[in-house]
Length: 185
Ligand SMILES: [Zn+2]
Image (cartoon, rainbow, N blue to C red; front, side, top):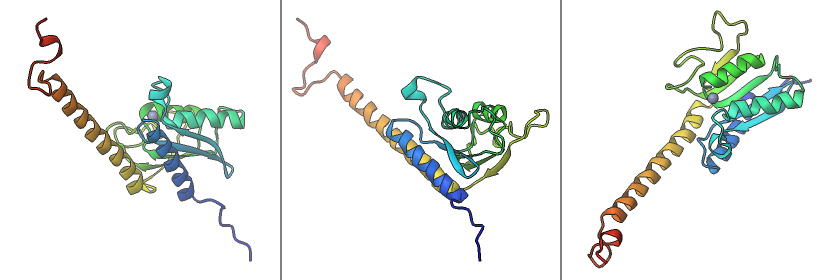
């Protein structure tokens, strides 16, 4: 008896995207990861790199699309599937339409900037000539937890930083006297 079970499942690809998201986090970026799969092969991988590359367009999905285009030697990624841990923003959704990608599978919804249904839907916009199939919510809880943990940690770091600055700026040194510039010569 032969089995038609694919070698890798949607969940496997999403878990790979989560590993890439962790890579972004290790580089100080918001943890979002993306994988492009074409004919059962991973042809593109990306993670957020906007800060490290000084590039507002360096979102995980864009990075994955760029690599996939180079690998396939075609910017048109017809029948390819994008797996991404967070709902794409308008820029990335637009790039997906330009790439003619077949389908996007995303994890967590982005209620503030999501352009695959949350604030708008650019992927199946009536007047646009190409529609991208959308599947949402795959490993959503885990993808969301990854992002929430990052923002929670960053808030705590900012708070600690602020506290340290307040102590430094209070003008009182260890001996209780005025510090630095406030001291008369
Ligand atoms: Zn984006």
